Amino acid sequence: MREHTNGCSACSRDLKIGESLKRKLIIIAFAGILLGSGLYLEFFTSFKFYAQLLFLSVVIVAGHVIVKNGISALLKGRIGINLLVTIATFGAFAIGHGEEGAAVIFLFYIAESLEEYAAERARKSIASLLKLAPERARVKRNGKEVEVHVHEVKVGDIIIIRPGDRIPLDGIVIKGSSSVNQAPITGESMPVLKTKGDNVYAGTINEDGYLEIRVTKKSEETTLSKIVKILEKAQKEKSKTEAFIDRFARHYTPFVVILAFLVMTIPTFIFGLEFEEWFYRALVLLVVSCPCALAISTPVSMVSGITSAARNGVLIKGGNYLEEIKNAKVIVFDKTGTLTEGKPEVTDVVTVSEYSEKKVLEIAASLEVKSKHPLAQAIIERAKKENIKLIDVRSFTSIAGKGIKGKINGKMFYVGNRNFFKEQNIDFSDKLIENFEREGKTCVLIGDKNRVIGIIALMDRIRKESYGVIKELKNRGIKTIMLTGDNEKVAKAIAKKLKIDEYYAELLPEDKVEVIDKLLKKYEHVVMVGDGVNDAPALAKAHVGIAMGAIGSDVAIETSDVVLMHDDLTKIIYLIELSRKTISVVKQNIFASISIKGSFAVLTFPGVVSLWMAVAIGDLGLSLAVILNALRIGKTK
Image (cartoon, rainbow, N blue to C red; front, side, top):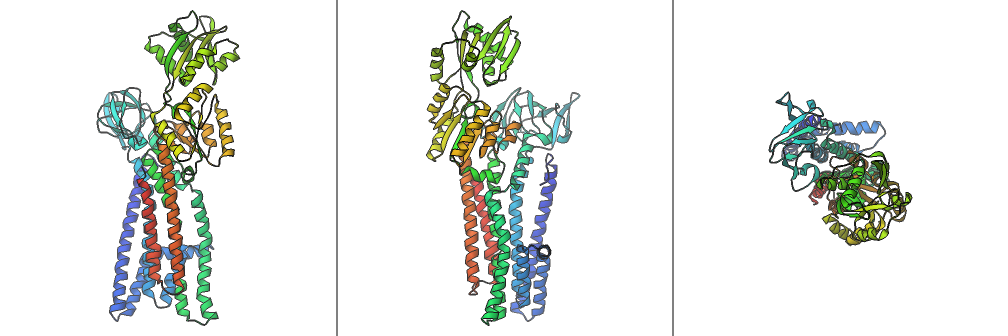
């Protein structure tokens, strides 16, 4: 597929597809009239010669490409479906069954067109995402409002969005507030309030307010564009089942040709039966054995599943991941930002020295302002609420996963977890900390080089949907495991509340990878769910890595196999259902293709099946049934 550039190439492709479909419909209509006229002349008049000319015209109009491709493949040493149909068509003419030869080519052309339409329909459902973002934007330039093409908008430009407008580019709100419908990107059912400082995304809909947005990404770099590129690539990725069917079809077709040759020769030359009759049956066997429906049974189902997921705010990067999810025996969850909201809040500030609670918070916030740890922001926010002014920090040092230190007014202070303080040989009492941890709270210690002067307790709220998702997974026989960098007691408290089977605490990013390694050896199929940033190595190690709440996060979109565009854990259950339904439909399609084709092949020997029946029912009808069955996947909720 060609790379998209904000909709323009997609529009031209859609135009070409529309023209191709229109041309095919014209050919089908014209060839149908020729075939109908030929049948009338053949069976109701004495103009048999003209009837044969009309049948030959059907082959020229509807089958010239089929015949060309069949002969071209043969010259390259390949035996394909087009060659089978070509042999059957001209063989029918050779034994005086021109009407059946014309019917074979006509019905096969319809079947091919139907398959192409199904594939393009799936592709267009992805390309239609691009149309969500308008091609023009209103930009503020020199104090005036100017409408320009989105390609002309630069990063840093300010665009104006009025009520009812679709947002054309990713950006940050700098003025105004409004409810924005993000369903096209995240699948969220409710609009999200956007105010100054909030991120907005191309393709989303401004519902009721006026917004001014500073553009942060070019048109080809927006979240929406990334989604489309991922989905286009996903269509090319083959699942294990697809790869197997492809290999099977390559060996199957030559086998059919050899079998048809034996059907034609053995009864005639060994048993002395009528050549014309068994030649005809060999032609029927060729046609009825065409693996068209089998070849499309898996890809059309996989694409239907992937596009259905995209409409529900879930990006699946290939059919192999969609196929693998249903096999999950254990699902591993990161705690912070996945099972919990990822926004810890300060619940308690306790002093264990002559320092006041306010002073403890002041020291902690002054150090944490230089840190990037998730807990740091919560402490800083609490300090802001209490109108605490921060103090200048010198000699600041951060120790990843443990703590920070720095000098305030010439005195060294430390902020971190208990392990950090043990490493610094700073004494503290475990009793108060243990009381907080039993409540599921995380403790941050604040101290100088001799002692702990205070404790700040924080708590990250468990997502409401986490309880239901864990329960549902357990009901399905899937083991649940939680990984966290938090301490043992906090991890135990969270795991107990959620009734998680196992948990691993006090893990650094590299430790999480080791845990996944052990689980991969113990279980056949491991799925990991995380935030896609800190958990990237572990996500990459698992059979399937699922990133939570990835809207706007380039790292999450790029590192994981499946992307949940919104913070909605219930999509895990949806993914399992979608995977199971997709694979179920694939199996149904494969079974139907093999059983019906096999039955028709058997009925060929006693002469029950004719050429036109082989194509009309065994090929066209079966292909249509396979496609319609695959489209059911799109209804999965």
